[in-house]
Length: 352
Image (cartoon, rainbow, N blue to C red; front, side, top):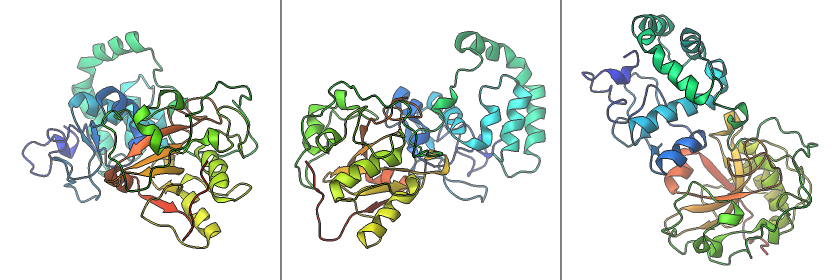
């Protein structure tokens, strides 16, 4: 009702009823929606900007995120805000006016009267439904969102000396061996539909396509890592060194790694993926971006990646450093994340 998308008479105000967008959630990074994707399916969030209701009609640019249902849209908006530092005062806040004030103060809307309108609407309508708030608090508690969840796929505040969470003695999480499939071959397996996979639940259908860090000198939860930080950069540097013959750390956050490695390789970043390539995304990670290694390029251009510091690995959410997981990204997802790649010209990765 305050948001433009609630206006059913405005041909541009269609984000609520066509995109199930609960107001103002523009396209960003799928790493902002892990709970939404896990709960409502991998097709519950679309960032292409081409779905119905994705058009922005207020002249502020960008496109709206499309959600498959209102339930997904409600969870998605809350989860999106929780991943942004601008709205931290609104998270786990049980005071309605204080929450709305924090959202407005964080700059959610460009309308100068937005905060006044929000508070007025809460006073006239929101207070009538405080019983729903209380019911939710009774069921989920006053602080259901844990701050440790706030940086999925993030390389935040890197401490290269940290070894928190490293465990030298670990279970055997070998994936068997790295795959030898050629880039551009194979369809994405029909059973590979999860958000991502830890090494111990990787489908058999994906094993021909992986790069297995445990076969390339890294111990799951153990030794062989450069930083022992549990951040995304540590996987890239630790495995990248093994694949490309480099040594030591590579300075930069997740979004900087492809460019830094391209400099090492003596060329420029590329937009075409390749097995063994270092990838960087500009979106996600609370402004720090994300990084990892490309395992395989499927025939449709989708890529299988290995990474650290997501809900399935690493420090910030999984709470175990020196770990990894696998994910598949479609070409549309790569574009939405603003993904670039780095690899040497005329040389293949040394994959074991």
